[in-house]
Structures are given as structure tokens and as C-alpha cells.
Image (spheres, rainbow, N blue to C red):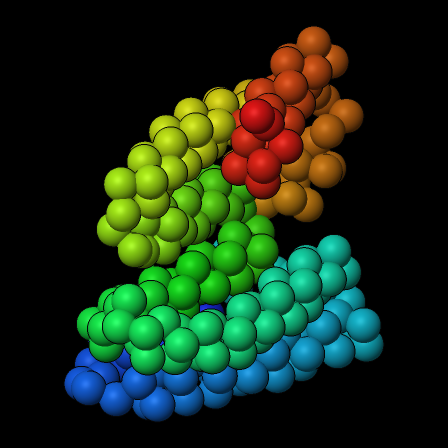
Length: 223
């Protein structure tokens, strides 16, 4: 239930931000309240993992010890980013650099980015994880081009191209890892771990290279 709440909060916050008309204070409230609520949900999930082991919402979503650590990191950074954004954008509005419409767009995209990050961390399926990571690329590209300056637009396009190529390589590597008898049913991390003894060593090494370069590009290791 906590995982469902965690995934629902940023979606509701994003839609609510889009529905706000003329009040930056309401957008700020949604950003802070949403991040705090997400933090409480994450803390609850981490507590359940510590006390009872992996926390599962369904066959598609499960959080283990590593997943709970990642959620805590994302939640803390998200809260800090939301808190800082409220003050930063307030100054930008006062200077006349941006208007209410841009602030609303920023927070709507920021909430969607958090949703994709939580989804990627919580899903038990490698393919769904890849889709969620790709979703973070789309929302971030619009945030990079936020000011609509030539340099910002150029940076956004470069970001899209580099990350799309990287994620394509990562997807190919993921598919190579899935090229093993998993006994049918849902492909998840646990099934991959159990089936790892049956991996062809050469294929596994090639898949690892693709995954390292592909997802490494996404996280900024390459270039």
C-alpha cells in the first residue's frame, strides 16, 4: 500500500500543479507537501524492509534493502531540490525572468521526474525499469530547456541524443541478460539472480559492457 501511495503522490501533485491558476504559493505548497509526503512513505517502506524484509506491492513492484536505500537517497535529494526550487524560482519571477506559466510547468515536470525515479527504483521488472529511466530523460529534457535560450535548447537536444543512445545500448544489454531460461512467468531481479548460473559467460560479459556503457551514459559516467 505504501508503494502505491508513493507512486500516486507525485502524479497527483503534477496534475494539481497543472490545475493551479495564478498562485505561485500554491505551487510551492504542493511541491513541499508532496516531497514531505513522499519522504514519509519512503521512510515507512524502509522501516518495513528493515523489520520484515523485501516489501512488495504486487508482482511488478518490490523494494529490497538496496531499493530502500535508493528510495531514501532519491527522497532526500527530491525534498532538497523542491525546497530550494521554491526560493530560486521566486527570485526569478521577481526579476521578471520567468512568469507563472513557466513556474507551473517546472513543478509539473519535477513531480513527473520524481514519479519516474520512484517507479524505476520500485519496479521488480528490468524492462519496466528501463521504461521508467527513459521517462526521466523526457521530463529532464524539458527542464534543461526551461529558459528557452539557444544554449538551453542546444543542451536539451544534446542530452536527449546522448541519453537515448545510451539507453538503447542499456536496453540491448538488458535483453542479452534476459536471453536465458527463466522458467516462464514474470521476469524480475530475483528470477535473474536464480538463473544466473545458466548464463553463457561470453554473452554475460558482452551484456555487462552494454549495460555499463548504456546506463553509465545516463548517470553521466560517459562521456
